[in-house]
Length: 211
Image (spheres, helix red, strand yellow):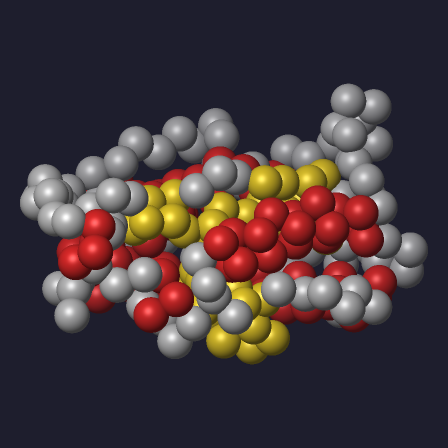
C-alpha cells in the first residue's frame, strides 16, 4: 500500500516543521547493541535520520548520520546478540570510535537540523522506540553528555503507527505493507534499519490529513 501522489501547493500554504509537533523535530534513530539490558550491555552502533519537509510540505527522510561505537568500559556483550546483528566488534575495518565521539558525531547534525527548522529540540522516532531511547540515554549518562538534543522520555513509535495503518508491528512486514522493499541481508544494520524506519514514518505521517 503506497500513498497517493502529492498535490503541489505553494510553499507558504503549509506549516513549517516547528509548528507540526509542538516545536519538536522528528529524528529517526536505530541502535545495535550487545544485548537487551541498557544498563549493562554495550552500545555498538547508532544511526539517525532527521525528518525534513519537501517543497510540497510533505515529510521526507533527511541525510543519515551514523557511528560504530567501541564498547564502553564496564559494559558487556552477549554473544547471542552478535549472532543476530553480525557485528564483528574487533574487526579492524569497523572504524569504531569511543562512545562520546560517536554521540557527538550524531548529535551535531541533529542539533543543526533542529535549528534549521526552528525546533526547540529533537524527538526520537524508532521501531520499539523506547529500546533505542533507553540505550541512548544510558550512553549519555555514562559520558555525562551535556548537549543531548533529544527529548529525554517522549518518543514517536512506528510500531504503533504501523499497527494502526497496516495491522503490522514487525518492521519488515510493516515496510512491505507500506510498499517498500526489505532486504533481510541488510537488516540489523543501524543505518539500514534507520533508513527504512524513516521511510515508513514518512509514508504513514503523510497519509494523515494536514490541518
